[in-house]
Image 1 (cartoon, helix red, strand yellow):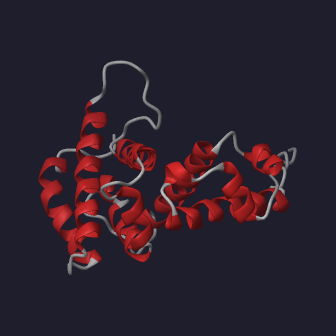
Image 2: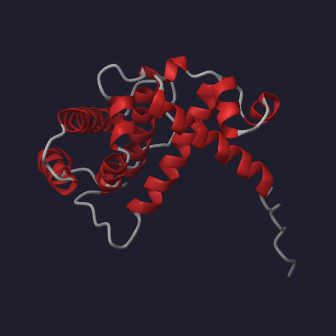
Length: 198
């Protein structure tokens, strides 16, 4: 029996640079509209050269997608945690996403509230819809063909979630994260009752 091939270990310097760029973009989005942030701004805040930025990312939108993919991985991990028991697998993202939005309230309000960056809202929507589709038994990527039912359901779930999240963040509602989750889940569960992972 032969040993399994060893996977190359990730270069820590590369990961540190990428994380510094992600952190810089987040910090800048606290201060400025996404559309006004340049690659030069991000590189300067991360204390790296522009050439280093372009080694890792094609442009700031590529960096944004990478950051949202990191959030997706975190949501999957949190959704699978033993203490998180969603009422339905398609709603596993809800509690961690609401808690994250509550912790980063000012940032989320700037990003997904009225006047927020369309690009950021669209990328968040795309990422959450993928999590829901997969939980319903669909594929992670969507081919350009006639949509499958789980794609339509994912759009309904995520559209309703984003609307509620936006409302909650913009109104400075006294509702707690747990109350927002309970309200959302109560409304969505009847429609998801017949859907389980195939």
